[in-house]
Amino acid sequence: MRAKIPGWKKNLYILWVCDFIMGMGFQLSMPFMSLYIKTLGHFDRFQLNMWSGLTFSATYLVSSWMAPIWGKLLTVTDARKSC
Image (cartoon, rainbow, N blue to C red; front, side, top):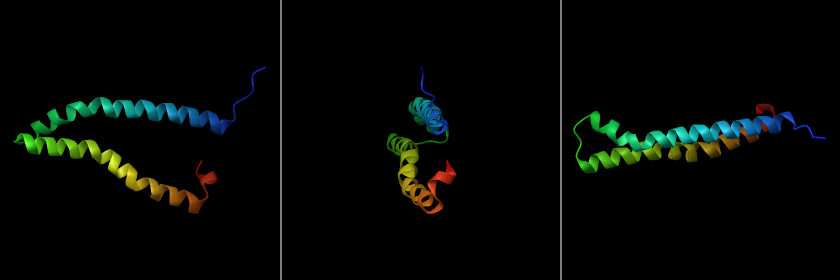
């Protein structure tokens, strides 16, 4: 007989798969970001590389800054209620 998966675990699996697919979508668009930035103005190679690097790293920088804040918020507000 098959054991029933708890509701929270099923939601966790679904969210993990969705997050993985969303991350793949972001990564697929990043190689074309420099081509898009190039159409926004007249940039030399150095400026284009700088802006492309900043736009690529912005997601990860914001995520690394916000993770401790979200963690503290969940600790203070009781994480079980937010799930």
